[in-house]
Image (cartoon, rainbow, N blue to C red; front, side):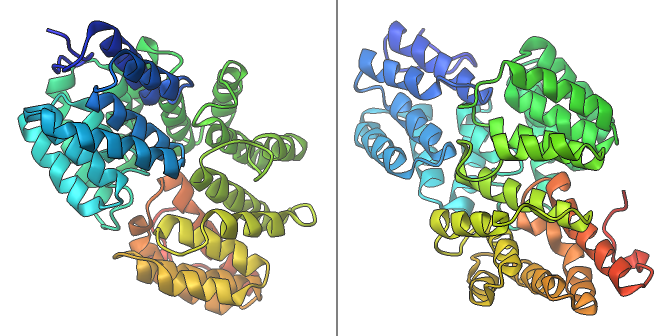
Length: 410
């Protein structure tokens, strides 16, 4: 039987299957070469529907909307020839591509009950930017962990699954078990960029700044700039340099690997990482170079011209607040889709107040949004931005923070 690395039957030939397996592994490791591998699979078998679906998903992850839609359209044309797992697989990934998050999540959970080792179908659920991460639900981190813990016996010591399960543990406060799982994953695949990124979160949560800086600096030496996580891993490096007071290194990393128009990366990462780095610098009393906020705000409006995704919109609102674009702030505050919209509105109000030195207004807004900030998506490390802003507003106001308003203290 021709099968993928997880034992799932593939309706294709051996050459196409081998290329498909290589593509899945590259995608799962955030490595380069996934697109090319899936294209090789299609060249070996033009009617290999799962390769077209995987190519669509890869383009989606990289932010290539047009090619993603074309590839998924071809997968759907071929799907009627399939049955069982492969037909369901294409249908589920199609819902992900269509942006039908709740429907996709339901479809994938049903699919996994019958085919629990279909890792490619599971993959859109995992991480802080996955279907759970951007669901807008307040319990999304614990729900994802419960899903992965339940599936763990099916995956054993698989490096990709261990890393993803480890991240779910870290995001629910189980840092020690998360460390154990991602360490095992990296031992099996040392070049797994997702695993290294998750290890960065372990070091962040544990306050291990020096160790985190060392591990990431070693890793990026051999990690291609075209890699999916190159921008974001360097964001972690830049933040740690900022915290350590190494301002020259912080700005060097930012300008070389984070700021818009200087680095390739998925636009979601580039926008949110650039905006949050500049804001953290501001909170530390470090003024960004002239024009840097304008650059980020322009990038935000170009790449995300309309509101929609809460995690994106809150960072667009931040850049707009820092450039005095009140209309854009209001557009994001009111235009976000889904259950996280009220949280975006509060954050947008808080950023505007802070930018205008209305410290009490910022305290009121961020104090109200902190209990619900998980709904926005993103990691604990990313969402600490809101708590740090609240604490800074208290300092500027000459007041002591109310512990009952703080979600966590660092």
